Image (cartoon, rainbow, N blue to C red; front, side, top):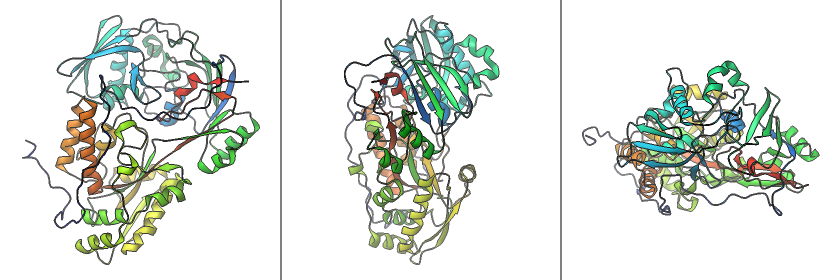
Length: 532
């Protein structure tokens, strides 16, 4: 069937002088249950002696969550506000991005890989004092798969959820689905809430929250602050250490820096320039982050339908220069999966990137574009690194006689243009995705759950590899399939992956035990404590 439906790859394949060599990447370590592979330990704030419980701190965030409803189509600011801290799911990511038990303490998979049976953790108490049980999981499924649910698409692979006891629940899938556990750990629609509270909460669920996490949200003042208090009955005994955390919403970086310097705020995310100013007096953590900056070609339009044109442009791109000029060095080379996403990512030293102007000009000549052409790249000034890479691409493409007009749109207008396929070339951003499938699916001919095909590029072998990996539960075999898929997509170049940005966090020296998370959320807050 696949052969009968096979579609051609990009046109004009003959004579392309760039060989399709396999990527050499480390073999993932075998594990018993399917989970995202581990990553090197993130840098942590130094901890002197045993943690000291108690105390309150003020932290700062960049954006207002706007909506605390865990089942709403909220942005990342909302997820960062309640994810891991207030709301949890059956499984979670640990500090090394490995999937570990959370509200479920164990699970097993049937031989046909269609039924996942979870043993639930007993003794878990929600913030309203009610007990967690299997009926809360059934309620979650009914709510997220309701016809009007904005997160319904993410759970389309689940056919049914049935409690098989007070503390056991069985999920039946329509087909084997390797990203299943990661989808639950992602907390985008997968938070488990006390059913009776949510049934009666109505609009109050947008400004209040009742979960099972280490901190209870005692007060949310939209646009100003969130006050967290310690959940005394939290199931991870001894955690959290802090009694209270006040999260102030401070969009302006200069104000966050001022608050850090004064000592009024003990933590804030900052950019590279601010980090350089603060590192003498504060603890500054710089770790691999999930945010990728890309340039996407619309392969439905000429001349970007020709692989040789796309390859030629990629051969004049200087990614290392971009990291220095745009990020002040606070970034990393990346492939389809961001560097730092465990062993799913291709190590930077194995990425097949190079600069070769002579070869690029040869490819342009073969494609009938020796004199270059004019096109437009759409981007947004809302995100400086997106505008920065667009300007750099326009500058570097001049070596091939290509004139790229940089058209600046606001973020929402750019998103609409890309969704409508109304672009020649466009800046794009990819944030944290829980499973490698999310990074590869947008380049298949059909896209994936919540990830439409964006470039118009089609390649039957690539589609087949990504489809196989989506159903393969063995992480080693999945990794090999994704490496093959990465080899194809990097060779065919429907997009240019510029870099992934480091996550930079500044903390007062009195904060100990905090550890960054590659997810961009703040689960490390439950292990943070005050020294003095």
